[in-house]
Image (cartoon, rainbow, N blue to C red):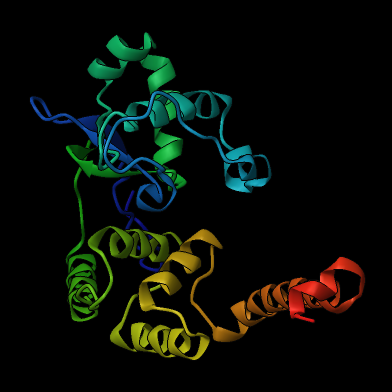
Length: 249
């Protein structure tokens, strides 16, 4: 039976599976490794777990398999200076003694939610490829726009912090343009911060951008605390008793 003319053509269903290429180890790196790791020159015998995990909605909503696997992967990451490690099934089966089902159930949600980034080796295996011509054109236009918005690492910002910021913006589905960086640099100057410190603060506080007003209150509280300490010391010096001798006779 022929299809009615009004009915749009049906596209073949395309499904994907994650797999590692033969002979290529899939390497992962924890999110914000350059910001939160505490040892830069050696592999630590232990790692720290931030208490904020208990109120991190993305982490709490992970499958139990992913929440159990994450700390073990962080331990593996601590063995290298840049935080990358071999996360292929063969390697983790040997190191962590996990089954294929535990691997499949645990690792993909951690990648999808941005807790780990793919450093190299991961391929998407397409069971059936059928991309219409119009869709191909759209993808090409998208690639052109992405290339047009590529911003080089700004002066005064380390490669590690810059890459963390790039990944952070990607997780929020926000582009990085020269205008965006110039605006953050301007706000950092107003706040008396370096651009690198402003980018770090943006990552740590999970902001999409940076504004001087957002850190002004924090700085104001610090100044008030210092003022209170100095005021107390002054009162102690001129308050009488033996303290008066410190100011001279």
